[in-house]
Image (cartoon, rainbow, N blue to C red; front, side):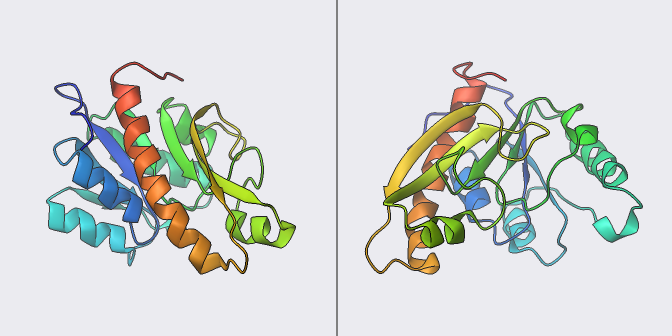
Length: 193
């Protein structure tokens, strides 16, 4: 069981998909997730938020003429929930300076040992490269994709005959554990931007 966060700790979670990382955070810190926000209306992460009684903010990117305009709206919606930290948990959009300037502390989880395999399709590219190991990285987001300061990393071996699905199945529990730990480390002052 993870340690409790300091009294009053509040964070937002950005998600675009099923929300398994969100669920790990909800299980660990149910009283501290202030809002779930994302860009895909049908993302199961919103259902997870609803079931947990957490406010959800969907922002449809098609209604904006620029990435900055979209990110400003997303940032304003998140800011309305008075959070100290934002966690990218399977959020599949690159955050622009318009968002990052408002929230200097944004953690992200990535399925590789950064700086290897930055960006999209990290697991597929690791398999195509034939590496013996890959892993999970939690890092602070900066304007450059997957280039921010590393908070936590853990290697995971690539097994013979590994598929994208089998490797992802083994990476997900590592993502969950590292992300939960990184959030605690942030709020207890063990890591900082």
